[in-house]
Image (cartoon, rainbow, N blue to C red; front, side):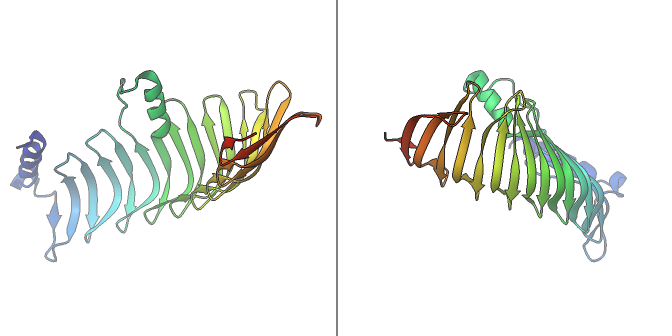
Amino acid sequence: MKIQTIIFALVTAVLTAPAFADHNRTDKQGRKQGHWIELSESGDSAEGHYVNGKRLGPWVLRFADGAVQKGAFVDGKKNGRWVLRAAVQEKSVAGGKYALQRLLSLTPAVQEGAFVDGKRHGHWLLRFANGDAQEGPYVNGKKHGHWVERYGFEVSEGPFVNGKRHGHWIEKDADGRVWKAGPYVDGKQHGHWVFQFAEDAVWEGPYVDGKQHGRWVWRHSDGTVWRHETWRNDELVE
């Protein structure tokens, strides 16, 4: 028998003993009432109050991997401000330092914002263990509206529509200079994009469905063109 299963059985036995009669109660209709501590065989736990079978008020959700969520329920659904903390990352991963940095940039360490009827709704802040951050509004559980994303010393910002980038986005370097700008459609780069490099060179042309496709040009910022390129499905053909 797995050690997790043994621990689960022991804790369950303790919580259901007479001394803990005020915990984990049900009424005559079988509905959960009052203070509950719920444990799963996988090691997750949840603690808070039930009223007539539905979670109500402050709850703490703890997961076997170390993640913690704190906030309130109303009528059985998450409502109001919540703080979600991911598990502490391991200091070594397969692939070395680069793989660890990549991992830390993909999983938010802390997320703070509001739920309405169980869905993220309103302003949220997502902070990553490597220092990166994202912030902006959710609507009905999806990113929707203007978001700002910080990666190291660079900043990307623009609109989301129903959880996908959609509309004009820009990227700024450490000096606050816009070096990349163009439109997204349904989460993919689509339309005319412009890259402004520090050495006064501009590279611009069309994306189609997330891939470079069409005539691209290199020019100086004064408009002088010094190179043409043709791209098809992200491949340079001439």
